[in-house]
Image (cartoon, helix red, strand yellow):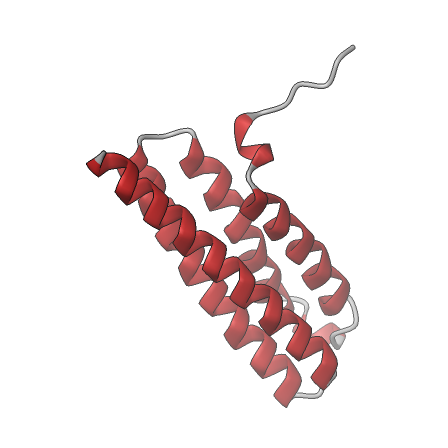
Length: 124
């Protein structure tokens, strides 16, 4: 049986968000057990939200997609805060924090670029 593929799966930002989610799951697996329902849960939910909102919004109208991308942007900022807290609490290394922040910056740029494309597409 042939694998079914959806259009949003071709979006680079979606694939990068999935990679970041894998990274966050790996990071949070090393957090103290007491953080299972705290920072660990918040960090993974925020990371997952980036991919989910990108996927969900892509099947809607351009204005709605733009709105879902705004939500994904908020999740990026949430992840930055989670990474910072994790670093300050010594749950992750400086290198892991830098990697997270660099990927998040790249995701933010990709999201904003897609939003810009959607706005300009509407004008043309």
